[in-house]
Image (cartoon, rainbow, N blue to C red; front, side, top):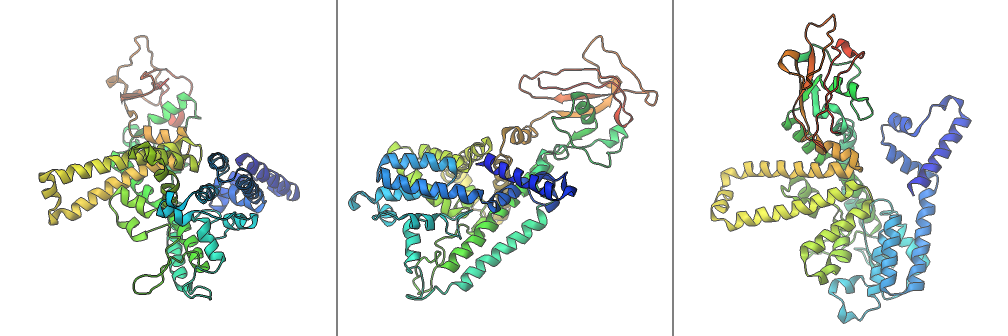
Length: 500
């Protein structure tokens, strides 16, 4: 799908170059930068305008309808749907097929929840298309069942029988809350980005007090694309950022990066409420409830100090969908942790095949287990229980819990947002990499006995890069003398640290 979209976008840019000669240097990356958007987001928008997403989704809908009609209520239909829709990214159809399968079973063999969602009739192509293309959930969710959608079509989802729902005020409340998050994210996103995690500035700071060399005005960016002599020479001008700085930035970023999802889900929830799809019956006092499509519990999300609390407040409908169709149906395994692990594996594959998704949901699995074990340990220990119940210490406990909670959340989200292993592994390695400083040559003996030094006329002493701690795939330190390259007026000789 991505390759087809890239082709459509590329053709569109070529047409623009032909129409306007002045845009011959136009590229998707430059256009995204000028608009202040990411290249991936711009590619998605352009592909939608070009109709690629519509053609692709229509194909998925037609094939899903044929699977239901030709394979019927069978296990084969479910596995075919899961494999096909996981590849093509249309997940609501997977739930549709499972509910259709349940509709062919005897009611007594189904749980109360399965009876609620089971489809007894045969959906028409129009119904399947309407269910998939519902404007309030087509791009980012929330997830809902075919039976719930059909109640909307039949006019049953309203607080005023026979009339359109009186849901304007509840819808505007969620929309307004979503806009607050949108404004906050828009204002802060240029300053708190995942791209900063990949820069040398996140990991190191300019070592001017030892080198006497000012940082270049253009800034400093070091990547694997630089030749090794250049990389080593530049690293000799740096010292390691303190751990508290890296932790604080990751903590703040880990919280902030989720706001874009919060924004989308609050806005789409408002759309669902306005249409009536969000109607969820009445409270005991007769007040209508509009949380059937709620994907966020904002207050819980902002205040919970526990990882389980974030899970319970974030992407609620998708979590309920996975619990209903994957986790609970793995009960036959007889192992709750195994069922949970497989459910999270499904969620990772749901998002895509990037390694970052697998690492993120693996981290979620491990963190939830550790959190449960720590909670049990405190509850079972009289000493720890009494200490945890001290009222005066509750604010301190809350602060510590929040710090640990969002630090681990940020650490997990780096893999989720950076996608590929070479990027998220770079961030992970920055927490355990080499400590390097620039020291005078007389205090740092060169490990090679036959080493020679070349002194610049402007420098009486020779700086070399000294590694106190270094971990790499093979744990080697390679030293190399460099000649003829003298950036920023530095001496010629440097040691080369390598993980080769």
